[in-house]
Image (cartoon, rainbow, N blue to C red; front, side, top):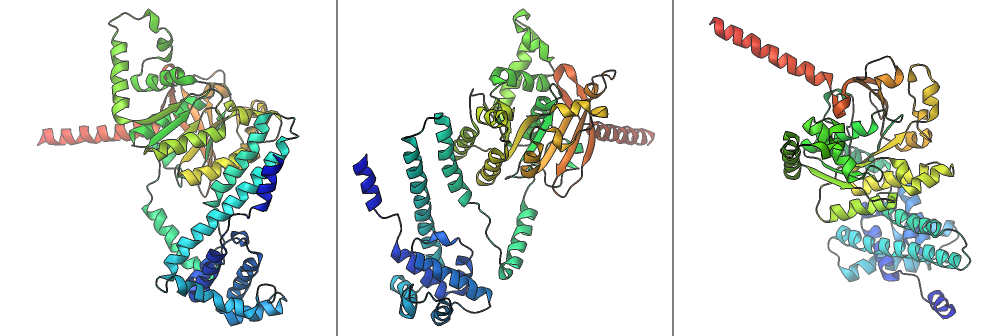
Length: 471
């Protein structure tokens, strides 16, 4: 091991002196390239002298000057580091590095070489991180899963590099803003399928976001998830559902009771059905419909962790499968999340990872969470974001936060045929309560707005028929 470590120390970190010089030369020859380069992090360059030159470019452009070798030399001279980076002669030679490659299409060369040096920077980060882990392992007495967490930090950092926000400079604002508005205009929002909900949401379930659904035990969280799943699949969305506690059989019971309207408890008593029971035929016909029309994926792996979820999504998408919405029922059933909560660390870090992966994988995550005990001590169970365990963490990272509550949970004397959906948070949008109808025996949620619209259509048809009959 000692010999290997000595060899690692003696080897140079991944980098290319020539590529770094070409990148700087491109910036000196093309103003647009220079303005793009100054938005990058300094550590993209391995050579510390090149980092000094990048900082000088940033300052010169900010002051309104052009990136010219003479102007850069003057700035670095005033900073007292001109000789350190190789002097004015070194700066003057950088543009010639580009000419030596090709004088055509400088921007094209810049993009290509920038990817290469970014790749080298990420390699250096991995090497440094792994070296630290290797050193720690020789004296490590803890759980191996804690060591794995360090590896995940490296993985998530590399993933986040791809979507990390960069500084938008004054000269970029107009172009970037117009691009964003055009993208928003062209984007088809992912809807819930419930008109009462979709009319209230400003952005729907847009890719790259998180919607948290929470509620008390038996409050209707899973029922809402399954009703949303069916409607979204009917609208052509690809839905992946992680159900580590429910398992496949329980998930399908709940989906099919909604779609066939066979009471949920009948699925539990299937052994008592007659051989030619009509319900068996309904179930099979429904399964054929799902197979032909739904892009539905169910993962019931026991012990699956949040990073495992990210890997499964990426694998499916790499194989060409459409994944738009990802449900996690229940977030606390993931062992790494349960550990964070048990140790009162909160869920900020896992949710931050989820936010990064939502953007990278272009999916919308919908984790289900449990309401805290404080909800039960409040008159009429009026919910607040703080009613989620570690609510401030969810508030910080979620685009939308919904709370679902069955009416008779709040009022034991009420009939169990109503649900309240509270939209507690959405960015730049409406918040409030939506009342829905509820069929307990099939866990079906019915939108009153749909019923009203259907009644209006039928009424118009009746009036039309009356007029036609008179004629």
